[in-house]
Length: 426
Image (tube, rainbow, N blue to C red; front, side, top):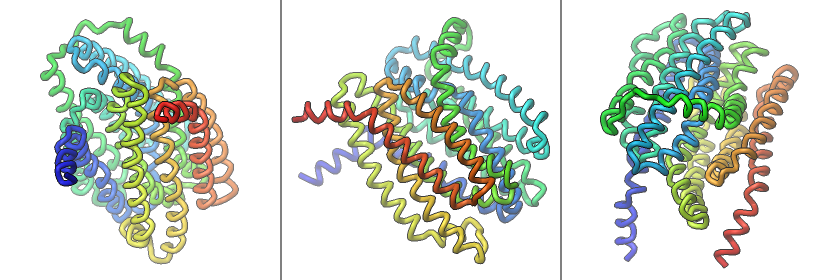
């Protein structure tokens, strides 16, 4: 009986999709493990700091270009997956919105680099980092998620990372080549994502004409506040390395990047699971609230147990991990303290992300926006003060406090829904 149950589970569509999706995301997660130590070895920690700042700026700007495509876009595609005409309209409208925003982002970057001397000093790093933003503009993953085509997501992810690794290893051979690191990440994303876009257009017979400007304006207007919240969220996540580099220099930023890269690996895994399960949760909650929340608990509860095991492994093998990232032996004990403390951050990210998923599915976007904006302002001001007067350890403690506070507020907002479901189950 147990054997038949296990076989049945393995044959289920969700499990097959997760295995396919998981393969592509494993490649996605492992790529930084190959590239970062190589960049430290070839370019040094200080240049790694400059690369990290370029990446951070790109990741913040990406949120503007993505707008609401990965939340409301995925939800709309998921709900209308059986309606070809609606899918075509959504595809064209969302890409039109993203293109207008891409132009704005490119102009904004030029202004920032030209008028702020600190950014102008590493201008080529930031300009080349725009290729990452362009690659994300093309990225059709939001469409693939909505129609649950996880094979398509895996193919473009793997191809993009292969091109990225190939470019870095074969073309960055000295410290002076550090300016091209982010360019190769962008080139890989652009080429792979173009293949995905062309496949979608052919599969769903989409023609890029008759774009409804009224719909473009509607999305820009309706989702503006949500996009602002996502922008603040990105600033909260990616600005620490920029703040540290701006106030304390590229070397300290490079040190922080090593710890952040490890934590980002864990955060990325959680975000990828968020994206994988989001369309399923939205679809179920749209049909039946009680069953949707049960599915949410089942998916995120199982993933939570697995994630705890990952954190234990990271803690136990912290020496090996830091040596892998080319941390010098005389700095190992200091970095080990930083890493052990920093591992608390993804514990609470593992709480906040599933709660955010439920907030979005229950249309609690307004509450999410307010919390995100306020927490980002608090985070930005606090980090700026801490970097000026304290050190890296205090920065990590402050980031932990931020995540704990956000998780607590989310639980307060969602408490009535959990209570309501408990009463129904009784």
